[in-house]
Image (tube, rainbow over all chains, first blue to last red; front, side, top):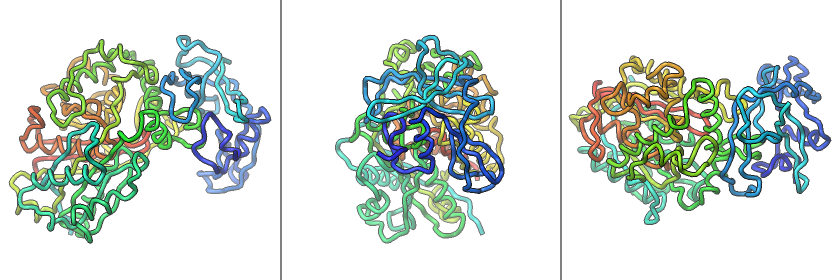
Length: 140
Length: 387
């Protein structure tokens, strides 16, 4: 498996410019990229900076993830082909951090009927079976 | 010198599971119907063939080339136009621009898709590739989930309920029961929708448009040709295209689709009309929530009032604006590449004064809007009986 193939529950692609994000997840860290030219910080990380078109990114630890708010959520009942049916139903959501960055991830540690828009969440790295790794939203 | 462009013929196949035909045969069936509908246009008059088609659902890689050979239209120019579910609307706009430029006078556009060779779970994997393939699809991003996230955000912000979403399907099924081209002919109640099995909370099976096989075709002609061959041309008054977001995390506001707002605003501006003038619309009701967002994003109702419009019956024939009264994607079925052309088929017939099944909509101005991906592409066409 390439690094990006290890991300999540099923791989759609084999190559990516943000493989280091997955390497860091394996070490239990969330990372972002910072453009060395204009200073913009990207989470999830990006290889290229759309603001100044530079491709000179510095990898930094992403520490602002503790104060997220859930913008929306759903519960997946339909197992997509390739995914393990035992994972479903699976709660998922979109969270926003104080810096404005957002992430889509599965949610754990919350009963499905307790999910609410606006609830406080944090994003944490998580190891999955078979050498896979992901990030999940948990109650903050 | 740019020409006005008219629709001079439309045709479509029945949508649903079609084990009797492959992609080129479905495309031919719709093309044949459109040619039979177009007075005084024969296959030799077609100067260009464009196909709206989304790749990945069948092994067919070159639908335009296959159809050009099969219909004996080769060697005329042609290619595939791909914008996911908005493919054939984007193909009609592409044909419009080739006629406007003087490159061609008569263009045939065929939207076609065959999805029943894959299971629903496999289709969702293909559709997952329409989402962010690096960081979102690997977590299980399905098309229903992308829209479920919209639904929860909208319901939380404005107080709409799951029953309000269900009312959209009740309307769709009412009209689909009268449309012989539609996949689902049975009428559903709010209770039927509420009791259908969960797909991605809060969306249930009957909140979702179904994967389907089918094709629809549109014959476009320059003003010079159109005015010679038909007394009932329907004019393309304005077109609009936009891109949005492939990632869910990149969506600025989950209660609106920016490609819908931008593409329809562009089309209204080019047509010189206001949304309040639109009498009939076919919009992208791939899920019940999407029709409610379309009401607002297309300017028919103020923000946060779309769900009240369906409660009040404002989008039935005879209401403020008739929306998806063909049955829409929910009732007609959604063979993704064919949907835009099927929307234009319905509006063209109503503007001419013809029926779809026994559905008639008295109107002079209509709009077709198709969205591709998870809100990735938008394509809109404003149609009028008046030049």
